[in-house]
Length: 265
Ligand SMILES: NC(=O)c1ccc[n+]([C@@H]2O[C@H](COP(=O)([O-])OP(=O)(O)OC[C@H]3O[C@@H](n4cnc5c(N)ncnc54)[C@H](O)[C@@H]3O)[C@@H](O)[C@H]2O)c1
Image (cartoon, rainbow, N blue to C red; front, side, top):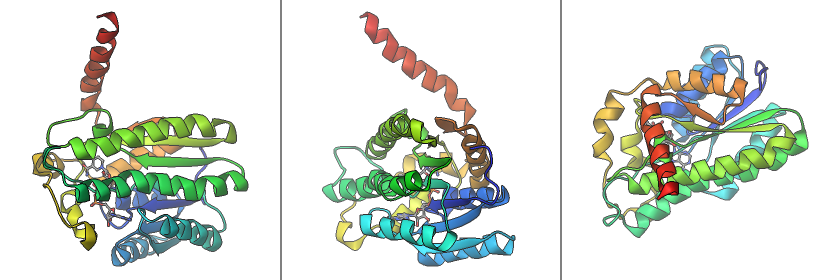
């Protein structure tokens, strides 16, 4: 979608980290931005910052793991902004530790946000985008952890592999509607992800572990605005995958070479 100026973007998880960087970059490219987050005060803060910078913006408290809440987001976005052209299903959380130590509460929480949030977002917005007609773009936040798994990150990677599978299929299904679909695959980004438990529902409090194995990678990571700028390029080019860390290219290549090698055994 080449022409994004003046058009409307919806970003989930827009109160913090990558979501906030997406909001800033999209507003910087001239878009009007709906900031959705379970952290209502944080969403208001991002929207206020965008308005201060001259962009039209609206905060909508949203729990992406809840289908009714995500439907209400879509309803509000179309009603208040008149149209929607870009949807970034970005809100996400992390659980660390071994698969053996993961609790049923861990699985329920992370699947409901990381996978359920993307599914709910697409379920709410795709029919409305199709009915609206014209070009649109969906960007689902996966991770390099959606292509490469690692010990201690198996629970998280399971959800991100699922986001990639979902995104690839949706891209093929929506091709003839003129709706592009991209998977955003960052590696270390300096965000509040390791404090994801701040948004964990009390009823799912039995936690298996923290993702401290990636603490250094996050602290040494790139800034969220750099991810936002890559996403603006990815939207303009309708990239199937949006990468932000070129150093992972060779590791991904060697993984797929390893898979191909198994065809000849
Ligand atoms: N930080 C990284 O290095 C990195 C790398 C790859 C992928 N990601 C992905 O990027 C996305 C954003 O994470 P981040 O790193 O910016 O973390 P973050 O914690 O800074 O931001 C996550 C945002 O999601 C919101 N959120 C959490 N649960 C929610 C829910 N149920 N409904 C609505 N909003 C909810 C939080 O309030 C927060 O504003 C996630 O999907 C994460 O998996 C992050």
